[in-house]
Image 1 (cartoon, rainbow, N blue to C red):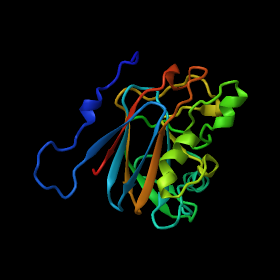
Image 2: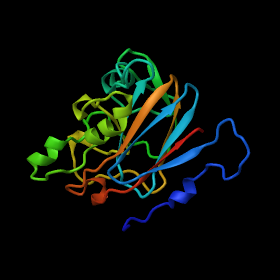
Image 3: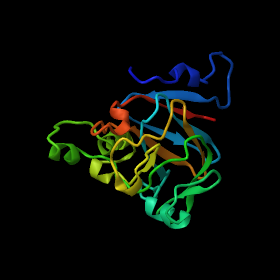
Image 4: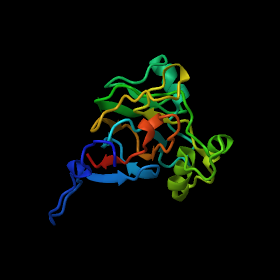
Length: 216
């Protein structure tokens, strides 16, 4: 690993004891270029951590019990936030025009609500075959919940992505250890993709692991 980062162990806040616990935080290390799906209950908090810096995380969420039809929507969120990414205390919204997540902490403050997830054809048209993609990662981890294809992946909230004026060049904003914390306002299924886009210096030119901390 050429990035100087935060040790994943620093975010391993799960209990090592055998006593019964109602709810204990658990850290999930998401390998570079892979995805992770997880469930959160209304009122629970979860955190996404950039362990090494400059790593974009494509994030999506769906309301449980809706067959993936009610979901986090960047269109509705942009409308409510007047096109600006959320500040602490503000919400992300669903395509039913209801708040789904509240941002309760953010050490980076630079994110993106305009770009789609990278997808297989994007890489193929650049001459790169069989490259992993965020849309593919979403479909893979959401398959147990009923997602059939990467074409079903929704437009993501791109955490730690610095892309003003639609520029896809090295404009890294996040530093090692930067994190965002959300509070679930509904029972949700969430998915995070450690973005595998490694062209043109994006993601610092080196895709790295992230951490997802649940049960906060």
